[in-house]
Image (tube, rainbow, N blue to C red):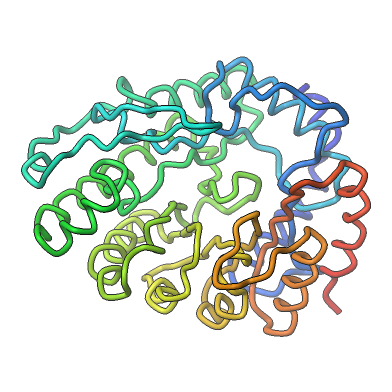
Length: 371
């Protein structure tokens, strides 16, 4: 399968995609068109769900399914660069501290383990190489590298981010209350989570033998390693600008300082915090859904200072319209051209057939073209 992937994605194909993406990440005009990446190509037949996204299947199953998907999606002409993804689990870091996970529906969630402020100061320093989901993911990365003879890069696992990790450890409402009643404990926890994020990111780099693509949002896009590290920060939608400026941005900036930049993903409506988010030191990009945060607000906040990585979903906020993949593509391509901003479009084929996705591909190529 590795040989087949190398045949379907020859060096010149990958070089063209990387040239477009690298230009955008460097806030330059791409050479020929705006880069875009399809989330996936729907299979010809329905496949059994194996938990590849959340990393709940075996290493062997995850590798096999991902390699088959990479081969299948070669029929798409987009800017996907083949890589393997360890998984997306809220509990990646919290379980190393002893937090428990539970399955609800299709997803694995973390049970908060902190009851009050004093529990924060009793947390130890875990060994991510031996404990929790973190250790599972490190082993998976090593397995991927060995099984593919180091010929496939590794996409960053979703580790959340300092604010989300603190929320997962303590619970969203108790954490928000503590920002008023026990701010010192919150800052102590946030610093611990920041240090843990940095430590585990370095372990991932080591496990990937230096061949880590440092972005997970979404884990289908290539980013130059020197541009920084990505994190998830869904709690940004719940905090006020005053609180986010104190309890959110400073810790993200520590990560940005450590790795040379930061890309921030958030679900939900972030419009009330966009100005502060855009002012993050060494901000490289943001990944937001345009059905949850209005695209004009995103590009106005970022200007030409960071990359807009846009997708859409089934959830809508603030009376924003639901979009089809075609409508999303047209909206983003038109806006990026008119505003001359640097963007990467994630095409999410929700409730779309394989034939419809393949038919959308030439439209995407046409709309992405720069005159």
